[in-house]
Every structure is written in C-alpha cells, then in structure tokens.
Image 1: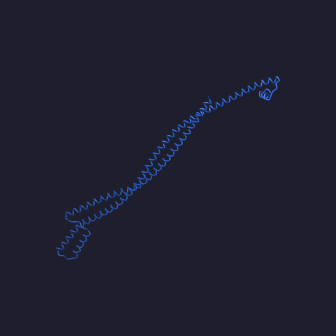
Image 2: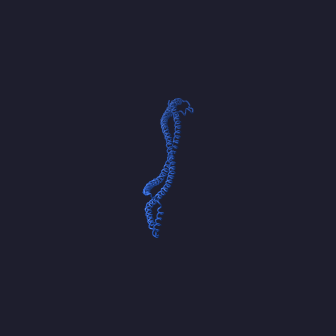
Image 3: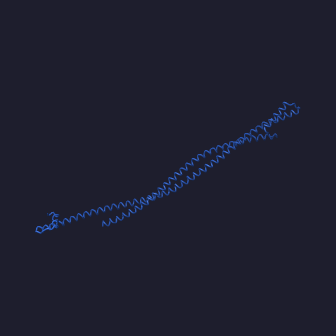
Length: 292
C-alpha cells in the first residue's frame, strides 16, 4: 500500500512540477511585458517633463512681450487722451475765431507780414488815412497771431503724438508677431506634453494590468509550491518508511538465516559425533555455526 501511495505521490509531484514550470514561464512573460511598459512609462514621463519645461520657458519669454505690449497700449491710451485735449483746445480756438469771422493763418507768414508793415510804418512817410489803415491792419494781424501760434503749437504737438503713436503701433505689430510666434511654439510643446502624458497613462494602465496578472500567477505558483512541498515531504516520509521496512526485513531475514544455519549446524554436528565424515560445505556450516 505504501509503494502504491508513493507511486501516486511521485506522479502528482511530476504533474505539479510541470504546472510550476508552465506558471513560471507565464510569470516571466508577464514580468517582461510589465517591465517593458514601465520603461516606456518612464520615457513618456521624461518626454512630458521636457516639453513642459520648454513650454514654461517659452511662456516666460512671451510674458515679457505681453508686458511690453501692455505698456505700449497704455502709452497709446495716454497719447489718445492728450490728442483729445489738444483737439478740444483747437476746437475752442476755431470756435472763437469763427465768431469773429476770422480764419487761422500760418503764424510765420503772419509774423512776416506784420514785420513788413511795421517796417513800412517806420521807414515810409504815408498819408494819414493810409497810415491809419496800416496800423489797424497790424493790430488785426497781431490779434490773429496769438491764436494762430497756439493752433500751430497744438498741431505740432499733435503731429509728435501721431508720430509716437505710429512708432508704437509698429512696435505693437512686432510684439504681436513675436507673441503669436512664441505662443505657436509654446502650443506645439504643450500638445507634445499632453500627448506624452496621455501615452504615459495608457501604458501605465497596461503595465498595471500585467502586474495584477503577475500577482495572480504568483499566488497560483505559491499555492503549487506549497502543494509540491507537501507532496515532497510526504514522499520523503514514505521513502523513509519504506527504507525502515526494508531494513527490518533484512534484519529479520538475517535472523532467520542464522537460526536455520544454527539448526542445520547442530544437525550436522550430531551426525559428526556419530562418526559421519564431513564434506567441505558441512565443515563450513559448522564453522559458521560456531561448533568448530
């Protein structure tokens, strides 16, 4: 019965070892697939990090351009306020002159005419009526000179403002161009970063799936190993029992043989005492039986 049980256990052990080899092979494949994906996860994580850093670096640059643009727009707002103030002053002057039916003239031309008239009054002898007319004309021109100068000054100030605005608008065009270019570049890195994160997460799920399968297979292998150990221990117990039984059988056989040898030796010895001649084999039996 013990030998039959031992044979059955040895068969079970072979089956369990075969199953363990198969499970170990599956575990190796799962570990390989998991580790390969974890490596890819690291690569995509690093790629995402690099693209994020480049995007942030570019965004810092665009902030400088946006600040310049903001300052330029603020300056344009200030210049527009100044323009509105100058336009209002100019309008007030024109309104006053229109009431008096007077039109603004070029102050330089007007000053030249005044100078010529005054020179004529100083150097030329004129009839009283003509002189009075000339004096009145100088007075009227002088009356027009101050508002004309003011209008001229306002126009000059407005031209400066328009010129500054034009220069600022050119700068704004450059700022906008740079901002658009940089934002486009930033967008590229942002999209690359998002793609890398997406691929990282997708592959991470695959790696986690393989890891879960690995855990289940490892539990299966541990269970097989435990069962194999139990069968192996039982096999060793049975083999030890069989060895012990074999030794007992051998001892018992020797004991029986000795008893038979002793009995046969005693029989031969009795015949020897009666005078029977011994052959070689009988002589050996007597010696082994301790009777000679």
